[in-house]
Image (cartoon, rainbow, N blue to C red):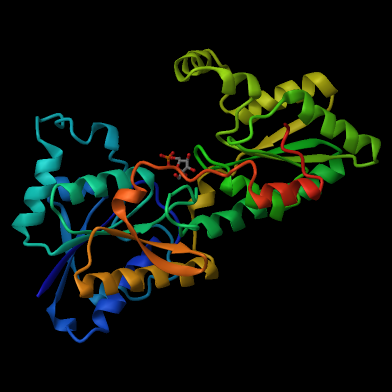
Length: 359
Ligand code: F6P
């Protein structure tokens, strides 16, 4: 008998259900199908800490390939405070270990992004068997070329830019579309290129407002009446990038703008006299049905996770490198961020196409 605990943690994204279905289908198709019990922990690590779970069967995972969100629910349980006692003095790490052992689990299948992987690695260090799957629209997990959720979010952010295009052209305005992605620019770069943005601003390439304005004016001189700027929510100016973390935080406390896009819009309007509008698609980018690519991708990763469990191989994230599904040791993944390199070929190609990065 194999007893498997499963949980989804951190921000949701498309294809979480597809990935879990992939794991369970693979186990169900194995010779030992009667000998598998699945404990679905509710709302991420919280379920494991407080012993909140549901016993699930293969049937619970049927019909969810196309369903957005996560059937297990999720929550953010920051790694930063995971070792701190909760408000009632409970040791959260010990509680997770105790629940794991009380249920006599053979392993945990954990689906999550960066923070989730730090905690998953801690649980591994504490002696629990863990297999993880890389989810996030940000695509910022180390050790895998791609995370599921990313491609679906690229599609949605691209749609947003496409819609804005027609209005921008009609009104001869500058339009900023703010794209999620946390501290990295993968989503903005891909959606920006797919949507034909003229300027793409990402955290890894700090921008100079004068270069942004130069590009808008150059477009005007060439007869283009409008400009589309795809801005990552984590984009940062050259001046701000020079500040220490502390100085930047202090500056942000006094910042009257709700996000970098609004600050940028005010600066562009002041320097060019042009009308500037901001669109923030926000959490829409994580919502709805996974795109076909993500359904296939998450199912493939889920199948490999199922195989790892059948083989009793633990301590790995199932990742994707050079178009192959791979097993990546958890200790190599935890705590590292996969950023866009300013020298990456995609950035160089975007520049060849005339896209400005405002630098
Ligand atoms: O990590 C996914 C993500 O959507 C980021 O792109 C974004 O910065 C963050 O989560 C938003 O978090 P929350 O859902 O907690 O507002």
